[in-house]
Length: 550
Ligand code: FAD
Image (tube, rainbow, N blue to C red; front, side, top):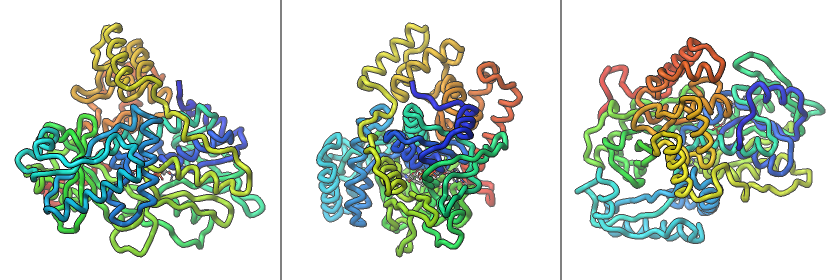
């Protein structure tokens, strides 16, 4: 089974080893670069300043998609690449990249219908018709059956197509675990604070382990900067006079329970601000994500959160279109992330390209940034080839390496999970759920949890199992309960209190498992609660002390 190295061991290996490639940044881009390098037989090290995916890669809209709207900007190459990656990732990680129908009700009549339909023909064509099924026109009754929240408001027809959804943090972790299985050494909470140079080239970095404070020197023949919106900071360390490359654009989401917003397919709907933008309501496990905004971030990179303006924009569009009366207080969570967009001529960040770029710096460091979650594999390939542009490299093998998961079809594995749970005297749903989300590893986690008294839901009605917290702490470098709750499970995005109260009764079990004292786990929970409050931002309007309403 694939695991991450224990943190102490990873630190030791970083300290001792000499690497071919040092990757800075443990979001999806860095994880992809580590996997690509390891798949070519390179000795790879990766360091991440916070927790894996704690930057933008845990805050995306969670779609693995071509990005239909980029066709409006005539970004045909980008869409072609993205739809093909979508279809490949569905095969490499079937339990993690799941198809979902999306529907766009036609509101503005024939012209709109014709334009959308033309876009969808192109979308199908670019994926060489390998999507789950080609787009089609459906009647209002089809939509109402799958989006009861829209009942009575759907125009006569709507267009339906298929894209995919994922758990972005889990995707990062599985890519990292796959890279580790191929020999990569990865460490989180480890920040690059200085470069090591020799003969005018970057040949490694001083890395500060942020929990213990120890600094190690990591030597590598090549260095890739995959730090997303922070890429300019690292570039400035290499080339203090160099011009900035990026414009950070904030995207916010609100999260609702299914009973408050009943949609079972992705629904694309217009903003109510007359800016021509579209939003989506996306079923994601037990909740529905609604987003997103696209605003230039002026407030720094390290404390991003939805603003009252973001919340109002989303609520206004949602409530106008669905005829609902929802306020921010009805949301179970909210989150925002920063898109690392390449600076360009366009005024609105929504109009800036989602392409990626690879740059070779004056001291030989390669920077890869921009792009999308969906296209991480291609981005990684380009970055590794740029870093070793002057050497013959074995080819990348990532197009054929399964990303964790299972060799058997998801439905069969879910049935196996349910029957294993029954044999263990547990609710079948526990096993079905773990197998559905985690593939074969889910069955191992089920047995492991049952043996340790952790085979229970963290919170009723949500699909996360206490054992996943323990597993994350022991086998996936979760450095504390905050990492475990936010990114080994997704309770921070699905539970009103982030899973805090559900975790409390299990602290003695988790303390025994990790060898930590209960008070130190309690302190971790307090720290997590404070962070959650900050990151959810101004769901409650501090000026009015009233929930923001549409
Ligand atoms: P990040 O995930 O930010 O990773 C960079 C990492 O570098 C961070 O974790 C950071 O801590 C680390 N770092 C920084 N400095 C240092 C240092 N000195 N030392 C060590 N580590 C360091 N794409 C899609 O395909 N589908 C979507 O639905 C989608 N929706 C989106 C919605 C929103 C609101 C946003 C903002 C983006 C969305 N994207 C989507 C785009 C996608 O999420 C990003 O392109 C992608 O996550 C960027 O990943 P990254 O690894 O480049 O950056």
